[in-house]
Image 1 (cartoon, rainbow, N blue to C red):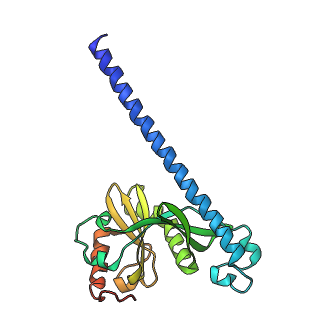
Image 2 (cartoon, rainbow, N blue to C red):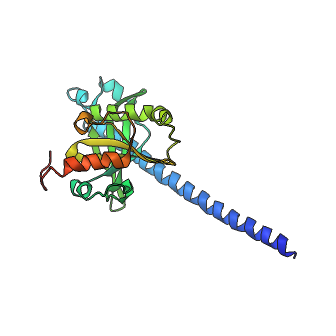
Image 3 (cartoon, helix red, strand yellow):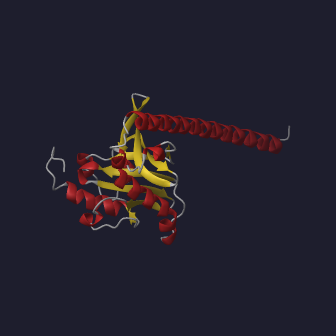
Length: 228
């Protein structure tokens, strides 16, 4: 066989194997995501059946029990929960991904029609899925609103479509942000109550390092073990 033809065939075979493996990975990822989403929907139905009543539905964002009958989970986002001690140890200029975090939880908006009513968290503990928090109506609506505007926000700053979007939370600081990884770098978009305390604005995109360094300053003022 001609050496040139042999090399072409070998290259083609290598590429085919590579993309075949990529396809398997994508398929497995899609299956796992569907499993989590199906579990979330089942969990939501369980909450509605066993927790919601005519007296408490308002606390979960619903106007009536009839409205809960068609409730469903929307598009999920993974959650990174940053502990105060980890934030205090953050080094300026470092990637957000260098911060140890809980990445085994997923956030789902709970929808009635096209409106966000609450949120549902699904946790993965010991390899098994379990239902987490349900409710937090105001927080869910605020986060969903910023998420909806995110393409427009990024485009205004000439930031390309994200490679990944994650919710980043620092519970002790009551800080909730969207963490965006794009070709241009890492960015954070606040979606929290009282962002002004950190000299930030909800729905505005900031370099991730700038925000983390600012949050670290506030974290350093909080004694270990004290939660606000």
